[in-house]
Length: 121
Image (cartoon, rainbow, N blue to C red; front, top):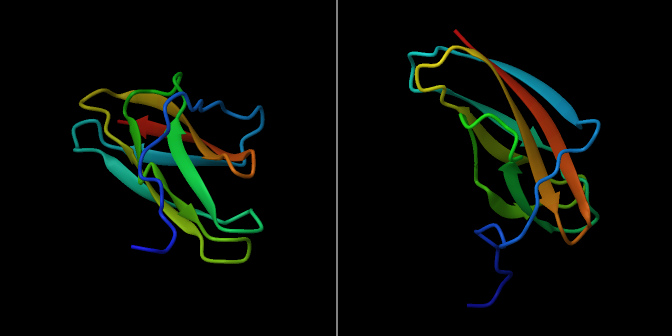
């Protein structure tokens, strides 16, 4: 009761489109025979106020990538960074996989994008 409610699901119809130039690029290594690898992505807040965010990989990203939480509330500029867990589970496949992570900030009409490249061996 009371307080600010946080969205926990991505709204229907929300699109996740990568920027032509990502805000960051990250490389990770993962053993193909493992249960996957994860990294903690620390995203600095960019908005003047608290902002709901929705995070997902673009449709053309490799299917081995996932992110959680997929929705939450980001602190205001200068505040605490938002921690996102990015996971790559290659399910026995070797190769180089690319995932484009988009963090939509709909109230600010902006987004933060990361290109993540996983090398599975």
